[in-house]
Length: 274
Ligand code: ZN
Image (cartoon, rainbow, N blue to C red; front, side, top):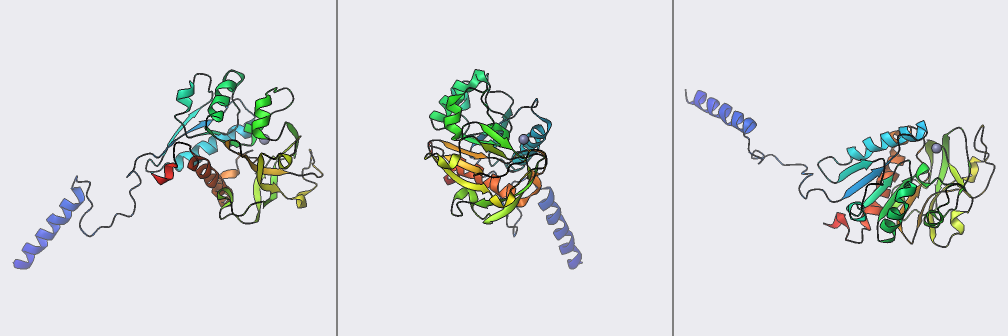
């Protein structure tokens, strides 16, 4: 009889533990993670353009999914927009980083973007976000990007061997010294970024790829693919064409490293130190 009493008591306690309603874990349970403990650390804004070339739209939508996935537990906030035209500077400055997925600011918001960047704003730009040619007529952007205008591309998109210029940089942390990046269209630039004293190149498309392309072929030349302009809190990543970027662990690590580096240098303080 006594045994039955204890058995019923244990059942009741177990049932209470499950239905509880309390936020406290049951005794003996160790909580493995509490993502939301400190609330969102920062806000990021994704800029994209659904009217762009299909492959650039594919990339943007996969990137939106990718960055949203990183917010599990409200670690940070992701907003997205297809235009900055309605933003005030104050509204844009709420964001620690503007991630340009496949678009640069419209003519109407160029000045806003310049003010944002000149006053400590953060920019992580992928592939088409850096694209500009002689018709763009935005000298500030050329200076900002540090690479002048578009010169050439490989076509079709294909995997390519890339090599790190810096292994000890936060953006390249834990990446192999060289690896085959997933299929992408790579842009070569009229002014070699490496010749620009303000630019620090972190990754280069290996000369071993030459000739690269089947229709549009690049036969040689210096080919940086990831770099920063030291005068700004910015990083350009040439990858970002098509739908193969987010299935590759190395590439995804590069993107996380890049985001973390830009965000960590927020002039208002490193959000990761909070
Ligand atoms: Zn492209």
